[in-house]
Length: 292
Image 1 (cartoon, rainbow, N blue to C red):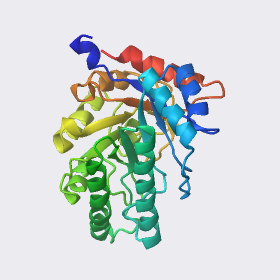
Image 2: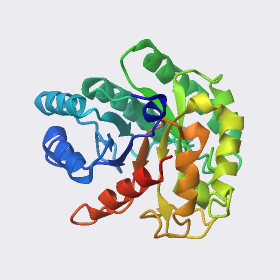
Image 3: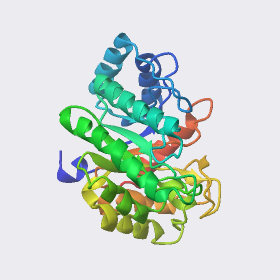
Image 4: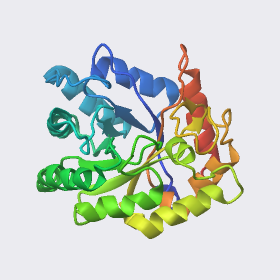
């Protein structure tokens, strides 16, 4: 391979697993021509921690290896380490511990989780202490497993006293855990747009990625969620749309794919897939076309 080829960002989708990891995810990845997959290992909006099926795990891991597919896990959307409700924090920690265990079983490279929210405007300082106390042990565990996944914090769409929504908010979040080397960043374009980054303006995506690099360092961007949006910039609404069919438009995604910070960084679409998977297939094809 040439150096240019090795630096191309692989593109794939969030992938359904209903019916079994190997049985469902591998044919889906083939059908949309994914180069990587992202999956849930539990209910996306619940606290259940299923143990997984060893046979499906083995088949999935082998099938991904055969296809050269990197694997990422998205933790439950309920995870909130900054919550003022103690039970929510406890369940969030358990959910991340579970995702890390399942990640080791299926060969995942990373576990994505949302940055969380303080909920109450007066709870921010306490929420950040909770992040430190809860996250540092998880990061140490991740770092100790040489072949296990790392954790990736994903800024939210804003609103609700978010602990990190705009990319510059990642600075205090990382400082809270002493910039632990096992914590990476997942950049979501719809979230950034909703949080007020004007990605649709010419140069807006580049400017936002430059700010991200200045805040966390280029070496900490480990995953990108490439999603268009149904809503205007700054809406704080997280409603995904297919690439080029939303309010962001296609051109900013060309900036995304050609920015130095995203060279070689895996890209996942979490857009509407449609009954025939055509949405994901089209979005993956578009992002591949926009690669340098």
